[in-house]
Length: 248
Image 1 (cartoon, one colour):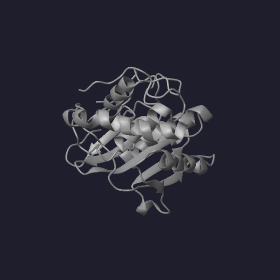
Image 2 (image 1 turned 60 degrees about the vertical axis):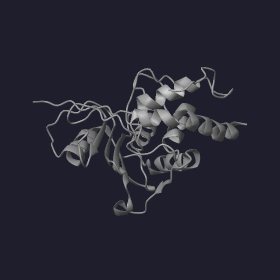
Image 3 (image 1 turned 90 degrees about the horizontal axis):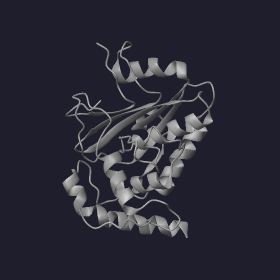
């Protein structure tokens, strides 16, 4: 039997996973989206996954609690390590509460980024993720995440290099960010790269908001929606103040 696997998968060590008033006015004058857009975006991108091995999403917060150390393996013909490193440094500067940096060795990393040419993608994913060279995979890029109640312990992203610059950037930004916790794509997220139908190719202000909310100290790993509801409005206000000060 052929099994179709969407491109973002989460595996748990326990289970295998392959409201308050919000204004509808713009959250900042330089931004088109509203607080309601941010709230809905957080629930859609963070509180679910695209697939589970059981067929059911676990709608709980997933995030790293420890510093994230990224090791880059460039299998592709074109050298891409510099571009990946630049994006990792950008995330470290723009997401409060997230400690992310490059690792000198693979064995000291908890996030591996493979940069591959399109011919290498399927064989490498089948070997590294599924240990099955016959499994059917639906997708052009992929991130594989290990998580449990203690948070994400490891992520492994597979980024295709040779389908054009825009595709590479989109793939890099989306998969690396999803490997940090916002694992779900949704067609209604028009301001985000977490939307396979959008033409956005890079990390947006909206995505920055979502990641800053996720890595806020009041958002705890394994929270369900009821727990998030109790703190989300205050967290959005805090994140808005922090990020707005950088836009002045």
